[in-house]
Length: 208
Image (tube, rainbow, N blue to C red; front, side, top):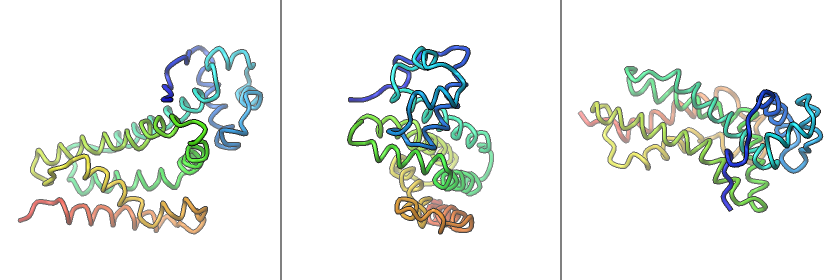
């Protein structure tokens, strides 16, 4: 069953307050252990207020994920100017992807989605659409703009966007999956980001 985050969600005066409390509790306790009582206490509202906005905990979790992913994507977009050279834009994008992977939010949400995937099959799909799927769509758009300007030569934009995102995870993703986050340094993230750009440009930069 696919879950739609906006379906059944109502907004009101204390909506942001509830969402902030839910975000803190979900990241601290995970999805299963997070209780509506704890969320109400953290948000400083009654359980009745929470249920007035969210009919169930799944929708609350998905709304937390949607809002945070949207915020991160908007921040990344704000730093990208279409007039910048392609290598500079790709470097900014790669650094943002690496930073998100290493962020507390990114790591915890990944674990929650993977851990709850069997019980809530739609959860992973929805989270993908809010996070990686949104990043993919923006990458396709920006890559297409640079292809149109002759700064890149790409026939399959969808594949190229996926390749770029995967390159940005090199040396980082597997160590995060296996609980080795403490072994990853900012230099590791920078090396992955810049290496991703170098390899991508070696493949898709126009041949002189």
